[in-house]
Amino acid sequence: MKEKKLVVFDMDGTLNRIELFIIPTYKEVLQKFAGAQADDDTVMRLMGCVDEQIYQGLLPGAPMERFDEFMALTAEAEYRNIDRYHGAFDGVPQMIRQLSEAGYILAVCTNGTNGYVRKIASALGLAPYFTWLQGAESGCTKSDTLKMVLDKIRPDKAVMVGDRHHDMQAARDNGLPFIGCQYGYLPHEVDGADIRVACAADIPRAVKALIGE
Image (tube, rainbow, N blue to C red; front, side):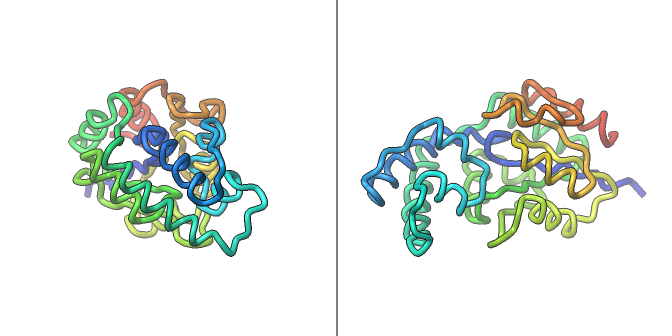
């Protein structure tokens, strides 16, 4: 029987160019919510974090009692802006098709919500290639979310692909090799990856090297 080989992708900074819609989203939301300004660099440093960390990072000292209000405003603005400004990194659609055609099972593991990951995958035209799209559950770390994917698919071999330190930590916590995407937003965070790639087109070769064909 052929081995089940799984490639698990982070979404933002790995497949999705989140800056296209997230910067205008948070500029709009912070102005409405607190009359505050969103600094582009701060927004991008917080991408990939869980929602509570983003809230506290953008609005230090803001009461958690208003977190749900903040998230509702963000979801409304984000979904509208995704439709207008979405885009994948160069070579991502071709890379995903290549891996799918080679017989790998593909999944996404993200700190975004389940609704968010489905919205992005659909907007980018990638949804049909993924067996599983896993967003974060309340109180879960990226390591917990990756474990959900592995428990669902139960592969014989798997590899995690991402652009942030918490992607690499999730891979380590679940006993997986890690491919670090240096084309993401904070390339130094993946210096400890098993293989680092400079562009999406390099990912299939890295996958083959780590878990075989």
